[in-house]
Image (cartoon, rainbow, N blue to C red; front, side, top):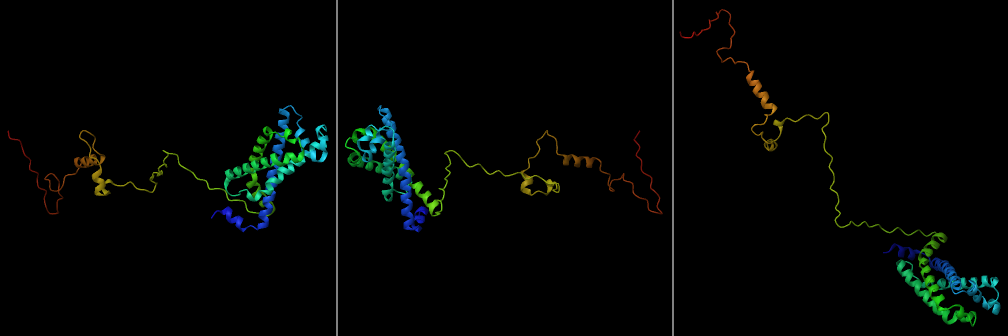
Length: 270
């Protein structure tokens, strides 16, 4: 189950309604300022006073005086009226705007609301201001302005969550999980095995104490190369070996009461 949907299910209905209205007014007022700024820019581009459209919007209160009033209270009145109209529209339609379906769904719903508001202005709003208001609000001015207005309504889901956190202490949404995808051709490095170094207490192994499998695997010295030190030591011990008792030249100890026998000397034949 989606955690966002589970949190919304635990919220009270009056909290949800109040946050929707606040988020709709917040997003709508921001969009109204963008639309009014575009109307002023369009008036300047067509060589009209930049406040002309704002003055025409105040015609229900000042009548025909708005056409020669200049920059006056009529300008502020028309600006306030446009902000109210464009600011209240998202609040009235806030129950139709999505909350947990992503930014693309919020963008599409904002553009649809802007199209509906554009049709309402063409059929009813401008005519209710003044009978000649359509000449001051042509489609070259209203279509781009309402498109920008629809783009600003993408802020509605974020403002809804912000209103809940500020007014009712709703917990913030959990951060999205981060998925790390390995690029093709990248392989995980092999784990490095640290070498085992001999310590001071370790003893040098005797080659004769190794198992047969390891002793057989040792290569034999090739002819012409130096012999190992162990074989040299054995040859040196054999050369300096003392004569044994079995050899005739080894002097034997003389027992008491016995005379030493003279050695037989061999004389070379003449």
